Length: 438
Picture 1: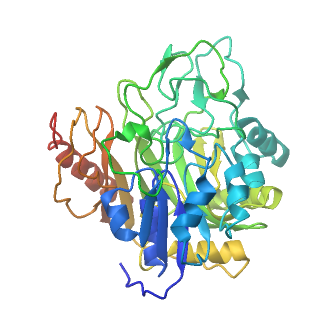
Picture 2: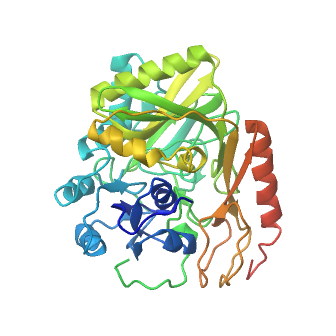
């Protein structure tokens, strides 16, 4: 990690989990002031200062008092910018409220709504000639071949087959996108792919579960509800078979420039068949597909005004590419693209300000994956975390079966080798997660 001098600029960060953005800020020579739901131990080491925010993965970041909490966190500093991660798609109006106090290096509430409302994105794709799966706000008469998803969900835990009587997003109804929610997709090596993954100033690190909102939407195995048709915040999308591919890109409001591509996979559980498993950075993408994706993303950028680091999820099926989702913020794959040699937050800030952007070149591959616990852990003890891990549980945490324990990384010359290596490390770590303690 590069040395960050005390007089270097600060940036204000808020997200469900702010660790990856804090690490990226340090690599860019910035001092992060972090507000998130967890204050994981490695987040606290990275942050200049940090606070815990009230909220959960089920409800998102609590909007009441958020601007005041951020102002208190920034007290004594003049942050260069406010950068947000996951947690704002459900209440995009929070972004506009923050913009009245800080310079927001990211997309406006209007742009978030334009790309995160399921019906709005479907209409936008239709007008631009971009293939996008059929959606429905009502449960189809014949639900086979359809998925049901929660607008605003992430991490794949909220996605299920529409024909299944039980699914695992939220245990209660939520309002529609733009009021509280946005969209996400499942992930499989040969099916559809999920969206990405992700207290007051004196909130103590009391025992809590990752099911309360860790990362990009990893929810507890116990969060289940009956599906009796469409409910507010839920919608149906026709399943498209194929291989998933995710494009990380940087936009300036008029044009999109590709950073790279990744492939994601799921870690199915009994109640979450599309639970997020991990992602690997790909070394290449077919030229024709790369050109097509670039053209589509530029068209979407010109129409919606997208700026900064964003991601787009596609399915490469028998009939060609299908756009599944746009994430208008840095997301789960930031970890596998950002490094000391390629500090992407510098380019993010340049793009938002309209300055020249230089997409980096990559060699080799990096993979990241989530290690879940199959058993409850009543009181997480202090442990010495191995290298190539992140999102460390603070001592005293309480985990339910199925909660994520940490993020694991691996690097290699090829994507296939990196993916195998990270999955091997996850299995090795999982052998240590015992009931009651790791």
